[in-house]
Image (cartoon, rainbow, N blue to C red; front, side, top):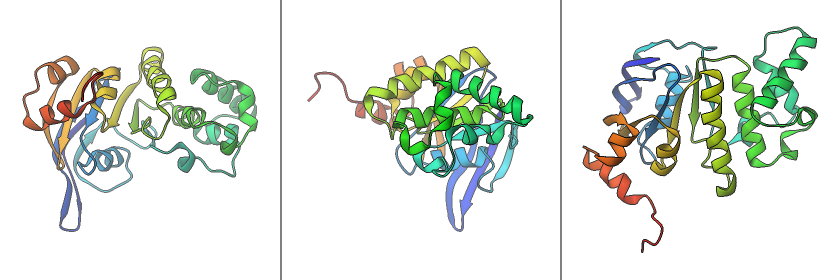
Length: 230
């Protein structure tokens, strides 16, 4: 997917300002910045949820699927897990049941969870269900918007590993949104830094983390907690 000169305005306020960014096939591109930098607005524009000007090449309702920050809010509490996962599946009823089991297996969840409600699952399990539901539409691009920030630290790593495994197994492209450079550094091939709606730096993870060019990027790196730091 290629984003060209993407701009999102809400009245007189410009939330995303002339952003150009590429997410190559099979890559994980991290979009990082502090709260209010425009990350989630850009994610929603790419997913077709907010109007924009500019051009998005390789996007479309089924080709791009979004996973939101809060899995409990994004899943219908009245629907069982299996029904939620099956929403994007376009198959016969019998084939859907098999596909739901396959999708749950892809995100390392047992098939018996299909009969449960979201309230009966842990936060990590709910986020895996949300990812499985997005994969049901067989997207080319998964937009992951702060998908670990609402989870306990103990399960964040497992979800990040899942994202990497899905990329390897499915050849999936991922636009990974986060305010946490430590998280982005772990999971992404490329990092794009957004500040006040504008891209200030784009490069490989090693380039951005090892030799940041923008002062804003250096400030974000300086804010990352380090063991033994006071």
